[in-house]
Every structure is written in C-alpha cells, then in structure tokens.
Amino acid sequence: MKLDASASLFETARKLMPGGVSSPVRAISPLPFYVARAKGPYLWDADGNRYIDHCLAYGPMILGHRHPAILRAVAEQMENGWLYGTPTELEVQLAQRICGLYPSVDMLRFVSTGSEATMAAIRIARGASGRDRIVKIEGGFHGAHDCVLVKAGSGATTLGTPDSRGVPVDTAKNTLQLPFNDLEAMERVFKDNRGQIAAVIMEPVLGNIGPVLPEPGYLEGVRDLTREHDILLIFDEVITGLRLSLGGAQSYYGITPDLTTLGKIVGGGFPIGVVGGRRELMENVAPQGGVYQAGTFNGSPVSMAAGIATIDFMQREQALDRVNATGERVRRALSEIVADLGLGYSVTGIASMFKVFFGERPKNYTMALKCDKAGYLRFFHRMLEAGVFLTPSQYETDFLSLAHHEEVVEKTLEAFKSNLRG
Ligand SMILES: *Cc1c(COP(=O)(O)O)cnc(C)c1O
Image 1 (tube, rainbow, N blue to C red):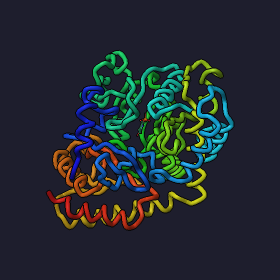
Image 2: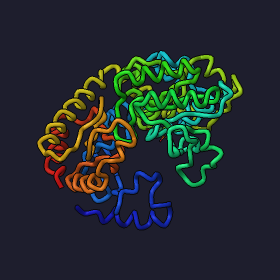
Image 3: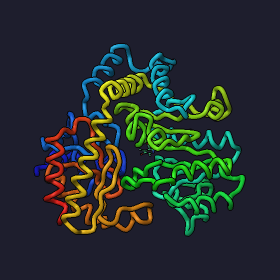
Image 4: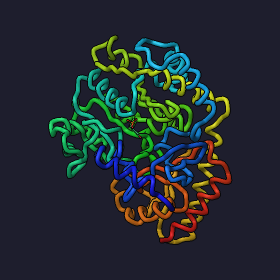
C-alpha cells in the first residue's frame, strides 16, 4: 500500500503538533493515514487508498459519511450565516426533540463537546448537592478534563491519583473509582463516604474499553443504591445516546438517571455536547442559577441544524432498526469465525457497536486489561492493509453505520476471517 503523501504530511505535522496529531488516538504507529475525503462507509486517504470505515470518527457518523440529508440541512443553514451569538429557533427545535426522546431530561444546555458536557454535569451535581466527591467507573471515559482523568488507587475505597501529568492531586483525590458490574464495591464506597459524594458518573455500556455490557440487574442496582444514599446518577450517553435506541441506553434498559450527557451522534458529525436532566437540577445552571457554564460556540447553528436533520432522518427512516440489525449480523458472523479459530478470542457489543477481544469477554476494566493488546495491534495493521479501518486500539469500540450495506459487511467479515489468525 502506497502511503507517500501521508508520510510526507506526517513528517511536517510532527514539527508543528505534539505527536503530529490533534488528538492522541489518531497517532497510529508508525504512520497515520491522512484522509482526503469520505462518503458512505468509505474513507479515501491522500494517496488514494480506500478504507471501509469502522471507526466512524469514534462514533458520531451513524448515518455514514457525507449523508445527503445532513449535507442539505447544513448547506441551507450556511446560506443564512453560521454564528450569531444570540438564541436561535434551531436550538429550541433540537431541545424539544431531545427532551421528547429522553423523558429524564426536562431542561438542557448545549455545549460544544462531550467533554464540556460531562464537566458541566459534574459541576451541576456538585453545585446542587454541595458535595465535592464524585464516583466514576474504572475504564469509563468522560473526556479529557481534570476530575475524570483519574486512576484508581490500590483499592476501590482509596482516593484517586491523577492519570495525567498536570492534574492536581487535590482535584484527583475527589474522584473515587469503582469496578463496573460490582454493586458490593459501590455500596462499600457509598458507606465509607457518607454525605460526601455528589454523583456517580458512568457510561451505561462502557464504550471506551471496547463495549463492556452491564450484567442483568447491575444498572437497576446502581439506580437503587444511588437513590438510597441520596447520590445523583449521571449517565454519560455520549456514545450510547441515539445509538442503543433514539432514547439512548436509559430507554433501552429502562433506567432513569438524574443527569444525562450526550454528544457525538446528536450533532450529526458537527461539534456538540448536551447536558440535561431534571428541572430542579438544571435550574441551577446560570443565568437561572449559580452553577456557571458558558461558551461562544454553545448551540452553534450549524451543529443544531445537523442534529435536527439527524434525528428527523433517523425517526423517519427507522434507521436504528436497520443499523442494529447489521450489528446483530456482524456479531453473529464474527462469533462463528472466532469460534472456528479456537484461539480463545471473544466477540462483544450491542446495537451498532462491536469488538473482537483478543481474550475472554471482559466484564470490567481489570479483565479487559488481560487481553493480547500487541496481538490486536498487529491484526489492526493487517486489516488496514486489507482496506478495513478498525479502531486502532483493542480498547476502542468498532462501529457500524446505515451506509454499511451487505456488500461492505461481507468484505469486512472476509477480512476478519483471513486476518484474525496472525
Ligand atoms: C467521546 C466521549 C466523551 C468526550 O466527548 P468529546 O466530544 O470528545 O469531548 C465523553 N464521554 C464519552 C462516553 C465519550 O465516548
């Protein structure tokens, strides 16, 4: 595969940007490919190579690339200008749609990224409760701000230590970590920190260590325990929102969180984040209340237009039924391929998320760490050579879009079949 143009761009980029990239996951070693254009299920790089895209920008592109309905909505909005610094009808329309799909969300604030949404959700929970500590799940990812870039100490009840240089120890110590699918550990931490925990923030399906699913009863247990201990429950649905169902994981599993964060799909591929929840919680947000949140690009008209077009198209075309059926088909076929290989690999996922784990199917972070990461990386590169772009890490989810039709799926499965064995 010829990568001369990418190699030349990367050489220049490394002098201009740390690691040559704008976000760490993109630093595919030894060389990231530079994308020139995208359409449907495909990416084309600067050297003209074509890839079937299962990364899909790490989630947002559920309708596939350059979807005509989104293109039309955005182009129409651009004709009217693209940033006003005032309220618009578009944000009212998108807010109505989101509140309709998420009964737990009475009010919301639009921000520009998922990271900003979780940052605001945590601030709202702290502001409303007057407590500083938060609980997160080990391996859960909520963006790249200080209080969620924290690793667990030596035990579930130990105070967190920073996971990144530059995060103050004083900040990290307020973030407690718990293993997923472990209600006993949660109850213990709640009892040990009585009256001090503002909220639990969790992805209902862990999407950032490969999809790790909640065991039956786990999310119900989390909801019961948080209520019992008067602790707010934040569902970070930046990946699962508008994916597991239009109403997200909360609708799929029938759990009502206190606060919800959305991002990725809800902007149709344009920058967006949403934090929403119960009225009396959201009334704490400025200017109505004393929890400050603000942003130049909040409610950006183009993102609003793309979000409205995405939701309307998905509803009209019952897009999720089709994407999720493709997901079922892919996971079933991969399970057969993996079983035939007899290497002890496993297949996980839900809806349009899937992953082949080079090891036993994990139920939490500790288990996920045991898979053969180096083996996955070698496999990832073989797939790239075969024209299939999976997420570059064992710990990121692979995605499907509405544009991944039968012929594309067949190609992907063929590539898995011939490349899984080293
Ligand atoms: C991607 C992601 C975020 C961060 O969103 P950005 O838009 O990248 O800031 C937060 N939470 C989850 C679950 C995510 O997958």
